[in-house]
Length: 364
Image (cartoon, rainbow, N blue to C red; front, top):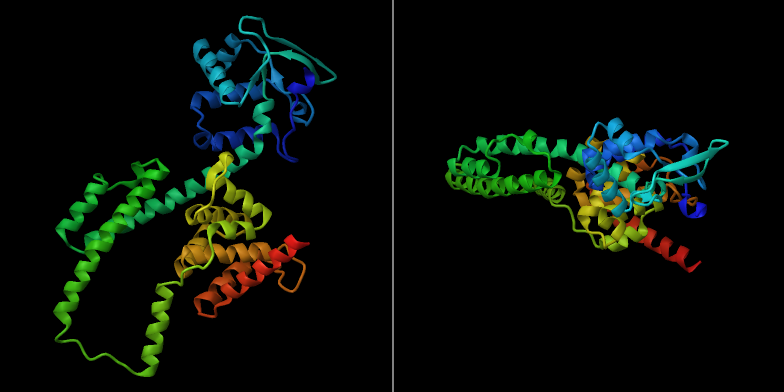
């Protein structure tokens, strides 16, 4: 019985209250109610630091009445929360439904317990860490999206087209992105407003072109002007990538792959797409020391897909020990984007080399 109640422990350096902080941060991603968080705070408070060591029993046998009092909840609410957490695999229960909860400790370690066991929660620490990273990313991304919404409203108003302003208001009647708490809803609003902007700004631009065509000076068709125009056009329209998200994931480093796997499908798994690759890359970039603002600028310069691949190559090569190794993955990423934006075409060459390197590693 004791072996079945033990767990694998928390990662080195992670305390039980830091673990609880991760659970708090990832509350929405894990689908936990505020009541469940209050309950878990009491539950962890009933344990000791040593209980979270691998191979130990981590449990508490405080009565439902006392637990409810400490959590400032009703007994029936505590019972419902316990049942839900047990059903969803966050907790275990060794006490029978009507038996009295009890347990004992010897030299600080739990010898036996008939109560609520936290082993399932501790064994899901990797999932909880990934969910917390996603929560932090979405919080930062939500602020960027709100800023984007405000800018789109301003740009649409500057068009001075009544139909455009009306269409934008239909998307978000109160014009206040701060009232939107859902990350998915923010993305939908941005997409809808970008569609409004694209539709009406294009029509407005066509009207201006027609109005100016008779009085505009002739185009400068000199070689220097043509060269600069073509270069600018290429910068605005980045080349399409010639690699699938699935292959890109195989080329990523171990840490990057883990984050991609979470965004692609979580614990259930699933093939990645470019959206999940972009979200994972932004998360990995932050880990490497690339700020959110710098990451966003690189995506604007090069396009998000090619920026993702630049980060992937820099991150992977940081772990190599040959002539392609890089000391600073963040700096290599920014330099690679700069070179690629200058039409030096370094990304495709480095990707080809990385594919060959990965095949060689696989054959070994």
